[in-house]
Image 1 (spheres, rainbow, N blue to C red):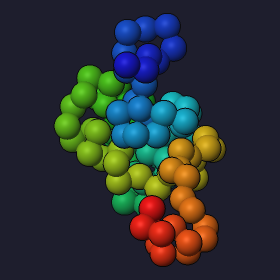
Image 2: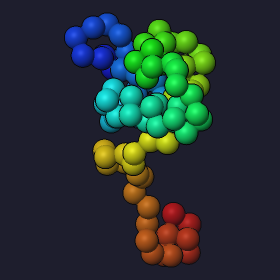
Image 3: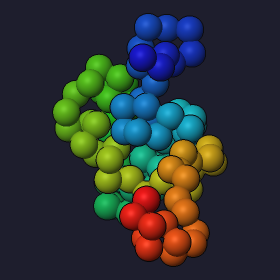
Amino acid sequence: MTLHSHTDAPCVAALIGRADLSDEELRHAIAERLAADGRTSPDPEIVLEAARARKRKAVAFLRTLVLPQPRAALDMPVQPILRSHLRDGV
């Protein structure tokens, strides 16, 4: 499990499959989403704490955020670029 700072709390970004994001980036995305929805509460930190506690509504909310593009390289399988593999049955 990925850990958040020096506590035993899980990294919130890892819970939504984006371990490359910092808590600050998540706070910013939460604040933007709440503002777009015309909501003044809850505070982004409360949402992060609820997600750390694995509250389903908080984690589901985080999965709906517009997040920055991943910075980490994506693992991709090697794929042949020539059609000879189709002809040879490989």
